[in-house]
Length: 144
Image 1 (cartoon, helix red, strand yellow):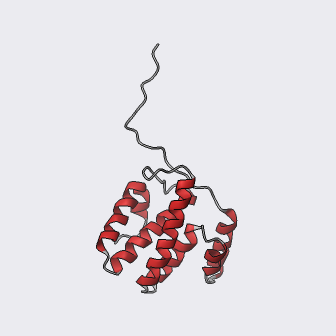
Image 2 (tube, helix red, strand yellow):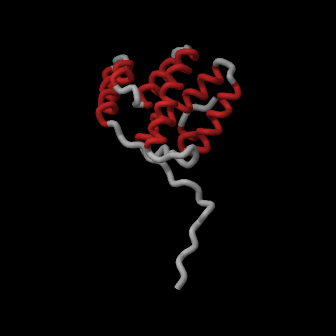
Image 3 (tube, helix red, strand yellow):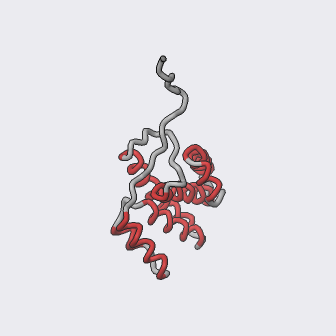
C-alpha cells in the first residue's frame, strides 16, 4: 500500500497564541470594576488585548487618532507574538482560540481607526488581513 499523498495546497496550519494568564486576569479585573485599563497595558505591554480594549474605548469616545496609536501598538505586539508562535506571514489565526482575540481585535480597531482618519489604503489592508486571518473574527467584530 502506498502512502497517502501530501496535500500541498492546504496552506499553513492555524496559529494559536499562548495565554498570558496574569495579563488576562489583571485586564478582566480592571474591566469588571470599571477602572482604567491602562495599567494592564503598562504592566503587560506585549498583551495585545489590553491595547485593543484601549483602542476600542478611544474609538467609542470619538478619538480616532488615539485609537489608531493604541491599535497599532496592539497590532505590532500581536505580530511579534504570532511570529514567536511559528506564524510566517500567512495562515489562519482562529478567533475561536481566545488568546488570538487580542491581536484580531487590535487589527480590527486599527482598520476602524484608519478609516476614521481617512487612511483608506490602511483600512482596506486591515479588512483584507482580518478576513484572511479569521472569517469568524471578521463576522464578529465591528465593520468599517
